[in-house]
Amino acid sequence: MPLLLQLALAVAVAVAMAGTATTTTTHTRFYMHDTVTASASGGGPAATAVRVVRGAAAAALPGDAVNRFGDLYAVDDPLTDGADAPSAAVGRARGFYMFASRTDSALLFSATMEFTAGVHRGGAVSVLARDAILDEVRELPVVGGAGVLRGAAGYGLLRTHSFNATTNNAVLQIDMYLTV
Ligand SMILES: *[C@@H]1O[C@H](CO)[C@@H](O)[C@H](O)[C@H]1NC(C)=O
Image 1 (cartoon, rainbow, N blue to C red):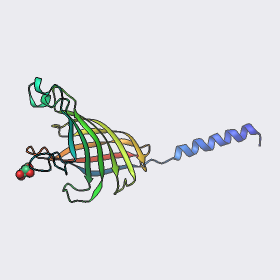
Image 2 (cartoon, rainbow, N blue to C red):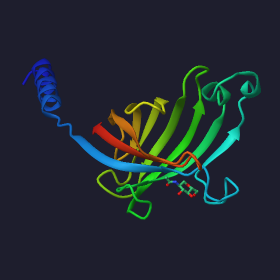
Image 3 (cartoon, helix red, strand yellow):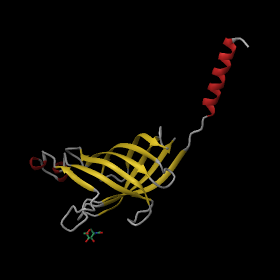
Image 4 (cartoon, rainbow, N blue to C red):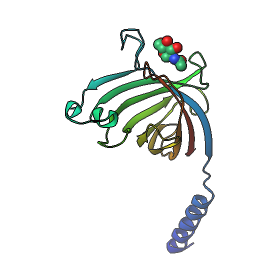
């Protein structure tokens, strides 16, 4: 067979194979436990969200939202398959959130979600989101994946399942839609 024909055949086969490559879209639901206050005096060794910066503009601006502008929290929140704290762990959300609006209760949320159990076990996704914490539904754009989720694309929908205004502790429900 002439070389050129062989080459053309090889390209045709490669194109055909690429055409049949399968992608899978999955929906998973899990819960993120954000514990700001783990003891009566605040903070505590079991806290999973810790304020590491107090916004510089805090004292100068009126209103609750702007008073927290610039506040930055480091988070290492457990992810579970149910809303109750004792339900089975599926991973951790690690990163930070910062009050990033002078006018709204809106965070910039940046984290990796590493899955150690469940369908995404051995994978991680990176999310970078605007989290307007009083909105019923917030969108978590997935900017990438690692491990078994390498190359993943998709998004999460974040809802506040429960919030305790005394402790600021929250349980967030996340519906994650991923295509790998
Ligand atoms: C909020 O947390 C406080 C302190 O742990 C607790 O006493 C109270 O019952 C909680 N409120 C709700 C609605 O769970």
